[in-house]
Length: 268
Ligand code: DGL
Image (tube, rainbow, N blue to C red):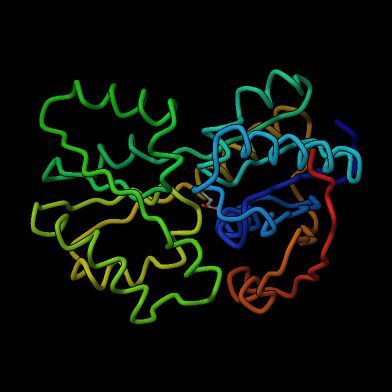
């Protein structure tokens, strides 16, 4: 790793991964963060694993060519599930950090043993999630209520965080969880913390929401420190998207001015 700023590439299908970037900016200094929102190909959660893998490979290569990144953060549960193993094989010298539904912290937290898992259809049907869930299935007193949320990412990208349509979507998934005594919900998609308030309202606040942004940020810092990163100084964010994106929404998530450019990645 070079002695100057750390270069971190972070990607997701849209605004969701900014929830990870926000957590990152709280712990990382002396770093340049390059965020890519692949909105041209969103939502990932309704694409095939093969397509998601190709998007992830193209973006990683772009980050390496354009910015010579030291660390890649796949700020997307769906892309982690479809691509992380191949990315690690293909780029053995790059530090690669993925995002996985926080089932472990949810188990530590639940009192009723009933845990809701909200994720995209692709994440829930992926092998990675299935093997995680199978391990949990052997634990006594833990019951998982899995719910795929098609359409929710699009609502969030449109800025419809608490519109009637978004509430209706969420209610059909959450009210059965509420009736079943779910007390902890894993937000298994980085977009979902952006509707966290609406979820809590529907669950009458009797619920703890588990997101993984801060754990990813801490892990990133640990990995960087192991490679002689000096964690004091400024942290900059540059944001790009492959299609249209609501820059105002991005700024309000990050709580700071961010320049947003549109770029063109050649998809293979
Ligand atoms: N935010 C992503 C995730 O964590 C992707 C959502 C999507 O594009 O469907 O799964």
